[in-house]
Image (cartoon, rainbow, N blue to C red; front, side, top):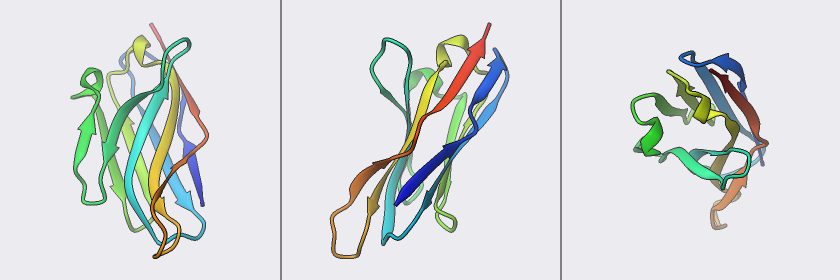
Length: 120
């Protein structure tokens, strides 16, 4: 099972970016999917999450600016980021709770980070 994150980059404050996270490989099911971020010198924090049924949660500082969505058909989660601020600069990581086989417990899988840099 692999999670592939993409979509980071360098933008100016106020601009938008879209991050994608795609799960590939052999697995039985995907539960919640989420995006985390880690800025230099800071702890990793949960930015947004979405359950298999589509319920979402957001970090307070991104509410109204970021939107997480998913496609169960193609096993992807997308984070749409608008009105970006310099304080959003971080490495963004996607994560998913994946059940490898029908009989196994779900485990957390992580994608590689993707850098988001917002200049002022």
